[in-house]
View 1: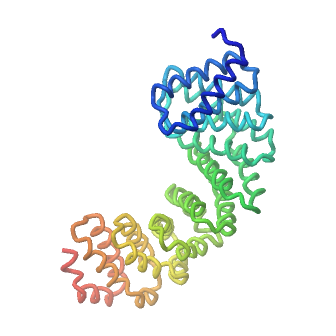
View 2 (view 1 turned 30 degrees about the vertical axis):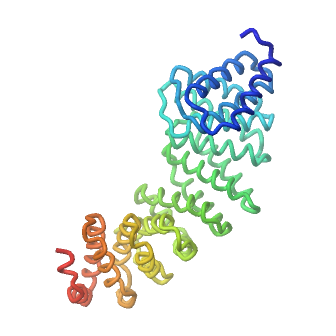
View 3 (view 1 turned 120 degrees about the vertical axis):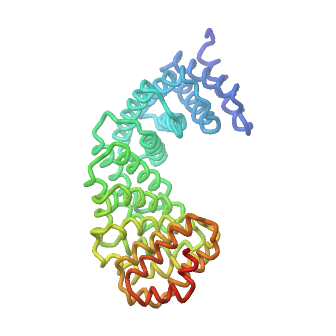
Length: 390
């Protein structure tokens, strides 16, 4: 308490540098570091060096040890937020403050008072975004990361959602060209997190779908595509209006099915693609033209291929069966005749006779086929389908 700011800064720097050499910080040291960093930042609010290193300690400690101190958390958030507000034009300090806020709130649950503090933090992050005009990619990434994390834990924002999402979409569009894949992932994740948590207007969802599709066509990277397809999956399960946003997009089906050919080793990506297709195609009011398009683009054949490749992945199998059911309910019968769907489905079911989940999903797929044409019923019975189902 009696130390001068030079001594405090040097102590903080020594502690931060020591953190880089420690694999496991430990609970007691984590708590002590956070308490001391908080005291230093509160004592010297106008010392840029102390504020920056204090935020760096919070960011590092909270990234590797998420032990919460409920009686101190609100004070920590307020202090870091004040730092961000005071130094938003100083790039390195603003980056450290945003990183600290992000790591403080990831995967955490908060009291009402702490949620209010985080709502204020969101406003300051928004102000920072407005001030930098997207000129600093590192700071833009940290701001997007904070907003993504805040949206994920359901923090309610005090500003108009449309303004922040419009600003983030502007930045995302501005950085479409170039190798800014990580930035695109964070921006799109932040936008969707905000829209999802704030119950926003679907008009903006449509704009974001356009943006995601544009980015998907320009970035051939597995990690980014997984974020994008999960975003589309989230939209596809938000109800009829959301499904219409996806179904009415002029090139979305083509792009989604096309990407089934790009990631043959990832059952996670293929399963999520199946989920998106299932949710769109299973809507009873949907035009059968969409189901026919999925078939013509090779979607059904790829699902059947991956059912064989991912034979031990019951989660993927269930998703693929559900997707096939949705497509078969309205696809052109002639298309379904030549792809060996019946034998493939029954073969997979035979490999998982004790798995109720697989059996239910597989039986549903066979039922949809049988309902389309008597010839399918005969083939199912001839191949032992009736015995398999019972």
